[in-house]
Image 1 (cartoon, helix red, strand yellow):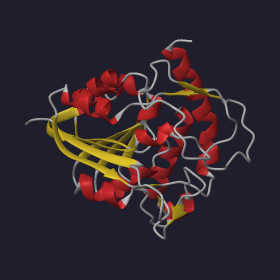
Image 2 (tube, helix red, strand yellow; image 1 turned 90 degrees about the vertical axis):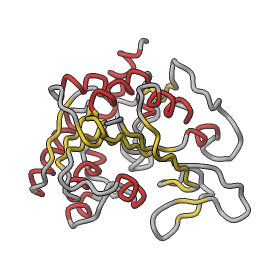
Image 3 (cartoon, helix red, strand yellow; image 1 turned 180 degrees about the vertical axis):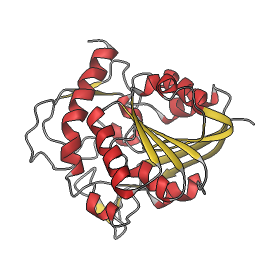
Image 4 (cartoon, one colour; image 1 turned 30 degrees about the vertical axis):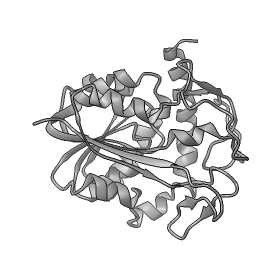
Length: 270
């Protein structure tokens, strides 16, 4: 199976899960409608003020992060390869009267899908890069979307966590992922812990070391401004993690701390 076929299976998987996610407690759409910001506090701080800026969110799913930036005053464009996700995001933007439009496109075709537009901010949120087989190609897209002086910002789950199993802390996988990716066919989805029966379960993910993510962007001539690693994550990656009041999950006292999230900001020279 080549990468195009793998990405087609991923699209089928995501298309089926969009309505499940929209209805889930995990995403809490009702809370978002009531004013909750879906972004992490460190994302808001590190991106900085966005009022009046043109921001594109790549791989935006059904748009909660995108619309959070719209609430902060950005002129937002969201892009995702799932038509149901784009439809759900478009409907939510209209309901809340937020300045955001959504486009259905594979991320690798984003430049053409967006009509050659350029942006002040290119944003990629948590859980996006693992669905991409070719980061060098992705970095070319990012560079082409940036205006001179503009920034790319991403926050991601740290690739170190992929070393370990899901029930213990034993090293079970290589840090340096395979170009073929990792196959998964588990039913259900992360928002419902397997309660809901799903039909399209085959998917592929790719592990990208932190050095690869940084290097492909530096190779485009972008200038590194920020690289942070965080000792917490946003879900119960292992059963022994402790949930704090802010909704983040941390290693308990006595266990070694490892990086579980990272953030990265680079700027295109003016």
